[in-house]
Structures are given as structure tokens and as C-alpha cells.
Length: 164
Image (cartoon, rainbow, N blue to C red):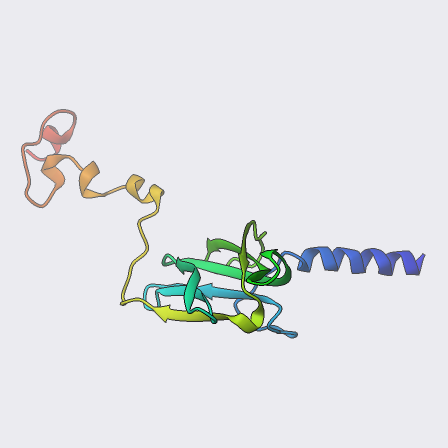
């Protein structure tokens, strides 16, 4: 019974860790692991992957502020055994996310023929307003004219009674 419990616990732990990606190196960080690049207002990042033999870019991503790019390289699975033998899987999530699935794939040069360039764009760069921001209470667009800084006539409802 103990052996079954240990096996089940090991399988459960392995399944939980399989989809986790972290911006910190962790315990066993290696060049075959997953790389996480985050972008924030003061450090808006761009990642470019070059073919080191021709210096041509094969992938470029301007990471939006508040997002992170996770990249994993598999040295097999590319579409060309000479020029692009490796497969790169990548995903874009909200910054700080540590669980996800890399659903995008791209054939890239092998590890000895690719170069990753991390560059910063001009800062500060602000994230776009989330869709729910337009629904915030008290915004100037939702206030009646008489409640704005420029003022206006108090019309209708209880407003006439309150301000007379």
C-alpha cells in the first residue's frame, strides 16, 4: 500500500510541475529549460532570435507591458534537419503567471547556430487600459454636466432640489 501511495504522489507532483514556468532560475536551471521574459512599464522588453550563421532574425516579439513571454527549445522537431532542426515552443501570458501551456511552435536553428537578443524599448511605456476600466464609477464621461469641473445646469431628478 505504501508503494502505491508514493507512486501516486510522485505522479501527481510531476503532473503539477510539468506546466509550470518561472522567471527565476529555480533549482535545476539549464539551457534546455524554459526561459521567461517579462515586460513592465520601466523595462519594456523585445526578444529577437537570430540565426547566428546569417544574422537574420527568425523570431521577434515586442512583449507588451504587463505580459511575459515563455520560450522553450527542443533540439528535435524542426522542419529542416540542416537549417532549422530545433523546435521552439512559446506562449504569452500576463506577467507573473507560472502555469500554462506553450501552444505556439516555430522551427529554429540549433542551439549552436542561434542567438537570443534581449533589448529594452524606451521607458516608461504604459500598459493599455483593461476593458473593465471604462466601467469605473466616477469617471468624467459618466458624470452629469453639473458635476464636472466646468459645471452646467442641474436638470431633472432630485438635483434641482439639492442645489437650490
